[in-house]
Each structure stands twice: as structure tokens, then as C-alpha cells.
Image 1 (spheres, rainbow, N blue to C red):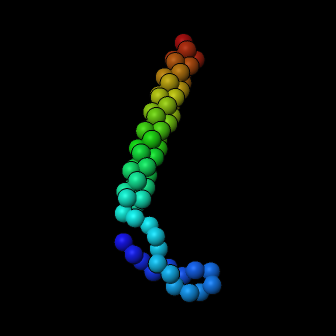
Image 2: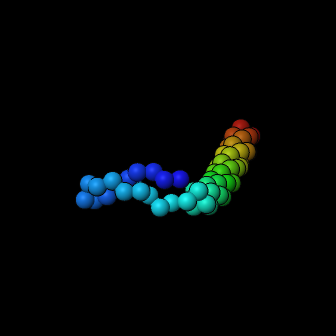
Length: 67
């Protein structure tokens, strides 16, 4: 994979990057995306769980105030 890039001096030169490098980059980015996805799900589960617990507590308080 030879692509043309421009150096600081303005002259075009060939990039020395192999397909193997891009494959490794894709694998690592895929792993990072998987970790971020799991973290996002965990944060949503914690937030929803806290909201449910708060709702239950509010219902309990309302029932105690009504007595």
C-alpha cells in the first residue's frame, strides 16, 4: 500500500505503512470500542438502578405520609 503524502518541505513522498499496521490498529480500536461499550452499559445499568431505587423510596415515603 503506497500512498502519496506531502512532507513539511512540500515535496510529495511515499508513505511507508504496511497493511499489517492497519490491521493491528483496527484490532486495537475494536477492543477499545468493546471496552467503552461495556462501560457504557454498566453506567446505564447503575443509573437506571439508582432511579428505580429512588422511585421505590419515594413511593414508600408517600405511603408513610398518607397514614
